Amino acid sequence: MTDVPAVQAAGLHKSFGKVHAVRGLDLTVQQGEVVAFLGPNGAGKTTAIDMILGLSTPDKGSVSVFGRTPRAAIARGQVAAVMQTGGLLRDISVRETVLLTAAMFDSSRPVDEVLTRAGILDIADRKVEKCSGGQQQRLRFAMALVSDPGLLILDEPTTGMDVAGRRDFWSAIRADASRGRTVIFATHYLEEADAYADRIVLVRQGAIVADGTAAQVKNLASGRTVRATLPPGGPGPVGRTASCRQGGVRRRPGHRSYR
Amino acid sequence: MTNTAAIQDRKPSAGGINSTFLRIEIKRMLRNRRTIIFTVLMPAIFFFIFGLSNKDQLLPNGHSYGQYILISLTVYAAMTAATGAGSQVAVERAQGWSRQLRLTPLLPGAYIAVKAAAALTLSLVAVVAQFIIGALAGVTMEPQIWLTAGLVAWLGSLVFAALGLFVGYLMPSQNVMQILGPALAILAMLGGLFMPIEIMGDTFGEIARFTPAYGIGQLARGPITGEFDAIWIVNVLVWLAIFVGGAAMAFRRDTKRV
Image 1 (spheres, helix red, strand yellow):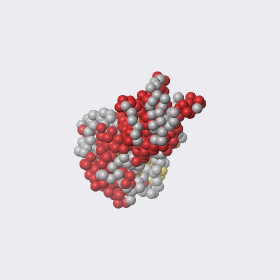
Image 2: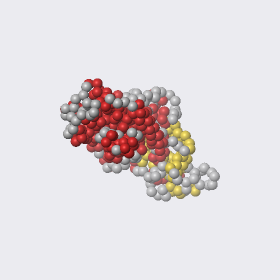
Image 3: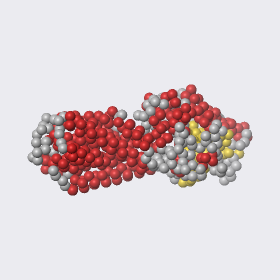
Image 4: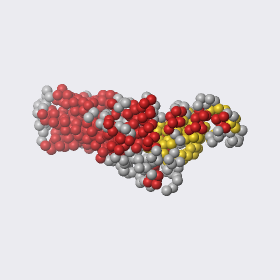
């Protein structure tokens, strides 16, 4: 068994017209990690995820998934994603949706098994358009489980869900991740990142500004302003507040303050 | 369950056409009430309006006007069915389904092939339904005329499946058929499917010969008019090339943008 990283991205850049959405993003995710992409709307999280999934091509930089191109990883069912919205046909049932997804892969998990794991076996015959937002999100999760992927990527998966729905959804994800799947999820809720991730990657303005354990980054991000004065040209950040002195948080040069 | 060694050793899926995909596509199409209204009900109503009153009137060669109009409206039904089916890609793009499929091994060519196959299934339903309605209304023809005219109408609808895909990839609209419906009616009229080209006047008659429904209509009615002109086949092939080329171009533009 080789120890190839689940995701390796180096120097990713992506612009849309004048908007420089991702600017120099470097990220390595090891197999088995549960990583949160934490950042405000417009930080470039979705753009970065699209490049990892091969849905868009980076202007500069490279990305590999289990050592392969994203497209090759998808063809092998090694990576799957739960997108924020859309991606469902309204006029077919929950079961048909999963059946259809499974049919695209040469080998897949049994439909009832993934429906059970996503907690929607009881609504299997319901039309997708009759499902609530939370149920549709569980359906997207079920579709992502079909190929039994080594890497699962979730882009703001609980947007628009109520508190109970959010909690249920995350317990399903968490139960799944405990079986060894690598999970990357984007969120702008600190609580979600804190509760469900082993590692938090703080994204701002298209680059990673902090990267560490939940406790470390939580202190940085919990509402107080942390200033770090960076010596020009040198990589070593100088911290001033208690949270910085706890150490272990990797800072990226070029960003002066975190909120 | 997932283990990393197994994940790295996996073989890529072929991503080709699969029967489950085809079956669900066809099922979706047939349970769409709107499609059935456009492809079965409307042409049937047209037949009762335009064809029934003078169906026993005879053409100079001894065939009835009822046969003429039935075959014409069958071509219309088949082309509407195929265009409607092809244009569903617009809905699937709007719902993000096309994007979702890009997260599976499915090859773009296989997706298009399944769409074309589903379009042909729906246009076959349209042809058969129209013929049954015509036969029940008392139109009689020799078996080989039913067969030839039906085959031309059915296979000719591939041109319009390509048109549907072309427009479906070009327009973001969920209601693409609301634009295509009237457009198809105009094309059908210009192509001589609602009334014989001979009574359209010189200018329109001349324009008609260059429109996409003309060649298929003429070929399908060939068995009863007793005429044949190679230019009709040229008409069909040129429009097929234009619509397939347009669809390929629009498809490439669509997948690049995301």
